[in-house]
Image (cartoon, rainbow, N blue to C red; front, side, top):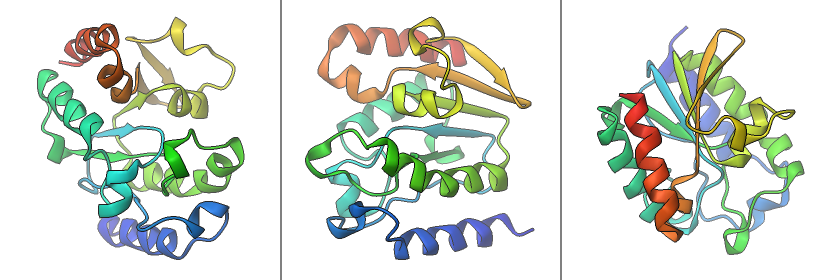
Length: 179
């Protein structure tokens, strides 16, 4: 299987997607970016306004913080596949609905299957609940969880670190554990 071609095929399908109402207000879809052979995938919540304008994930203020956090962990952002469960910007930067996440989730699952990363970083409650719906994020933040032969690291979404200094310090502490 040619991983790059498969990821491009998924990105094209996302561009044409009209499964939920988000297609009506988007400027660009945001399928994710990074190498097809990435050993690490970082999963956020949904694209924001900056991402909607460019079609690229995590490029606003939260993205700058994510880049710093990855560097703090000794990782090069260019070697991490970065995406989210929802591929279109929810208006007014609202949290995506369960229905929107559910309808978009097959794209993310296919991306994970194709890339087959060693590690997955879950950023925030939305990403965490996708994989661990019966668990509470606060019990696992800053820790590794193993499920289906995949290693998941759980932390807050970088946007929380932008809004609140105490969360930024926690994110920094968490990402230092990734080193």
